[in-house]
Image 1 (spheres, helix red, strand yellow):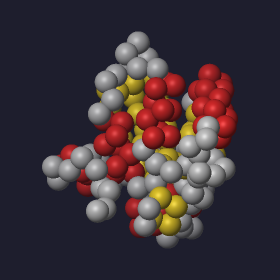
Image 2 (tube, helix red, strand yellow; image 1 turned 120 degrees about the vertical axis):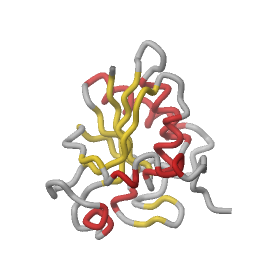
Image 3 (cartoon, helix red, strand yellow; image 1 turned 60 degrees about the vertical axis):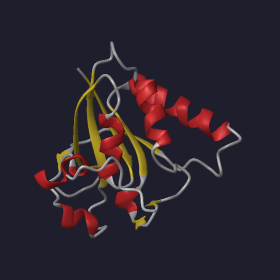
Length: 157
């Protein structure tokens, strides 16, 4: 199995989007990219840890490509808003790809550049592309949060 890690705002909806992809074998929501060891949800929400809410994905590369996962990532959020997705504001809601190897890094950079050049892009793509660091799994009640509640998304309206 291969691993991918993405941050695209509140992790509940992002996890649901990836769970629907054929070839994704497991997901976990958690925190990555900050300085605090073993942060809690409350720690991350304070905006003081530097972590982003993120989804770690295990996938079968024979069934789904990393490039397809990047397509899902960019489609499930607005990569032009800095530290914000919908009503959620703060660095923990930033847009980020946390790559696990040089191949993922190159693919993420290419996807970002391609999106930047598309006419439908409403602004600069602010998605950061950073090496994956320690991923801290979020509290159990956050795992598959929407699925447990019979919801497919957390979009308002």
